[in-house]
Structures are given as structure tokens and as C-alpha cells.
Image 1 (tube, rainbow, N blue to C red):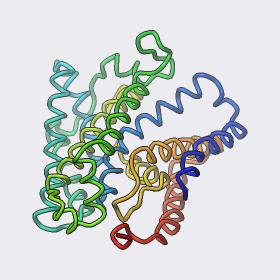
Image 2 (image 1 turned 90 degrees about the vertical axis):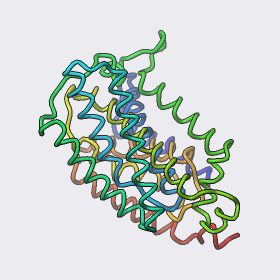
Image 3 (image 1 turned 45 degrees about the vertical axis):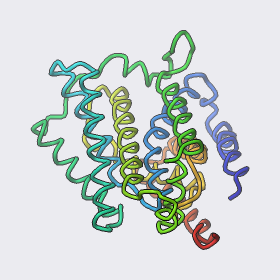
Length: 311
């Protein structure tokens, strides 16, 4: 799939959605679509970078659930939002370090490591709250994900503004920084990356820590939708983040792609899911359809030679 087709795909899917469900043309409908895309887009940062270094991050759903539960339970106990944010940042960095260090030192595939880390995170959260996941959500978080929300007088939900800021930072890191170039290099060829003075463990720790921080941010935003919490609230984001990355055209073999493409993939994935909901397709069948989309695109992209073989 060429770059042009990747960036035209969201527009094409929106036209299909517009014909099938005309209600999406209302301001509330469009803003709802963008807010859902914002949450998925923020969660997909880590998956994008993990795939770019020829890995994958299965701990994203658990990290989302962790942030979701800790926000509501600790806020109800009197913690300030700032204190909770600091705690989530520390825990997210620890999760990223565990994924990056373990996969580097022991030579384990990130799929295995991140799956194990996900189990530890979920179990640890449930133990810390004694299985009670109820609590309170700060009002401004609820407003942040409201389609009718505004920021500084602008009729834009705060979640959307946050996504735009995150996207700008992520793309700049990819294209204008040393660590960004090392992410591409590590995914292309580990040996060549080492010879170019890249430190694989440091890059992996950075990638998985950034991904965990973004997943935690998505978990915080998700609390605003329901007003409650669930340790499993991030489960659906495993398939959807991978789908967004694959639809965007980032190579599953690593070394190619980027978050700009994932943004297009996020919009297509959200529009496609919204279309399925419009046709009364249930959550289980939605997962089936997303799975089929992933398989089809993997088959198409799998025909391309890995970057290392083209050097």
C-alpha cells in the first residue's frame, strides 16, 4: 500500500460511513468519532514503536486497566490528581523497563515478555485494591472525553487536543532526534544498529516506557466515559492498536513505517468499528472482523522484503 493510499483511506472510509450512517455528520457524531480515535491513537503510540523495533507490546491493555483502576480508587481515597499522575508515570516507566530489559538481557521475544508483564500488572493492581475497582472520576476527565467539551473557548474536546499534542511530539521524536533514528535502525538490523553506536537495550526501554506512559494516559481518559473502572477495560485495545498499526502500513518486520501512518490507521479502524456498530454488529463479531483485517493486511505486507534485506 502506497503512502498516498494510506492517507486517503480515512477519507474513503468516512464517505462510506457517511452514506451508511448519516447521523455521523452531526457535530456530536463527528466529535464522538474523533474522541474515540484520540483514545485509540494515544494507546497506539507504544504499539507503533514496538512494531518498528520488530517487537510487539501485549502489556498495553493491562497498563490501560492499571491506570483506569488506580485513578478511580485513589481519587476516591483523597489522592490529588497530580499525585496519581506521578504514581502512574513511575509505574509506567517500571513496566517499560521490565519489557525492555528482560527482552534484551535474556534474548526473549517481546511478545513473551510483555505477556508475562501484563499478567503481573493486572494481578498486582487487583491485589493492591483488594479486588474493589469502584471509585470516583475527576469531573474534568469526564469533560475531556465529552463530544460537547471545549478547550480555551474552542469547541474541541480536551482529549482530541491532547492527541494532537502527543502526535506532534511523537512524530518529531521519530524524525528529528537520535533516539528516533535508532528506533528505525534497531528494527532494520540489530547488528548494524550496534555498529552505528545504538544501544538496543536503551532503545527498547525508551520505546516500551513511552508506550506504557501513553497507555496509562488512555486508561485515564477511558475513566471519563463510564465514570467507573475495570481492570479489563483495555482488553479491546490489544486488537485495535495492532489493527491501527497494520492498517497504517508500518511493517511488522520492523524498521519501516511510523506514527504518522498509524494516525491514518487509527481513523480507519475507528470509522470501521463505528460502521459495524451502525449495522448492529456485536463486540465479538467486531473482533472477528478486525482479526480478518489484520490477517489480510499481514498477507499483503508480508510479501515485502525486510528492510535488512534491502540494505
